[in-house]
Image (tube, rainbow, N blue to C red):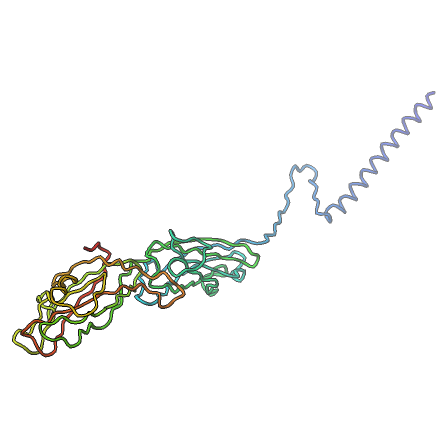
Length: 331
């Protein structure tokens, strides 16, 4: 009985010893395998382990740094021509400047149009491929230039420049700025109004002077006249005769309707308005161009002119009629 108890005790000691050896063996195996697996065990008496962290960034979206329109100044248009509006853009891509694939821009009247709208010379322009200078700044920065040829009849308003930058992974950024397109008051007229040969005490035949709006707003007319010096009270100075001046009252116009044919002095005075030495603002309601496709579609109104030749003048005569484009209301 005592022998059996001793044997059982010995078996337990042997089992514990074997288990201990197995644990030691496993620890040795793990100490060899785990470092190669990237696993670190805390050492005896240590309560923490420091691990290295690793990250690979796939891509960063490009972004705008600044957008400057017309060097920061409002835009003055050019009568009967285009004005080049330059937009200066600074942008960057943290993946490198070569990752920027394209920059486009749209310039439009902020109240009459929108980004993505179709082009129209009155209110919307598009540049689908702005020039990109990669020599600017550091390896992440570019300087882009977007230019627009803006017509003289583009709306006077606050305009919006919206630019889109895209990288090689099709990531993008959209940004905008605004600038003012100023009012342009301008029109085209014939060089002269030639009344031809008119006998003394006769009224000239009607002459037509077309007024063409070369600006971007509806205008009325201001009118005045003089022979030699402003305010001299005469319409023409003549080379011969006793008087040699034709009074300003004998030069007349009609801004709304034509009266062709030969007229008497009384008919002339009834159908036409006196030119004056002082500036008179007259309602004319001359609109501005709206048609992009027809080069002859400028807004044109006709004005009608005659002059009466009194006794006492002879030879050749000349004078001046001063036209002005105004936005003020006229009579």
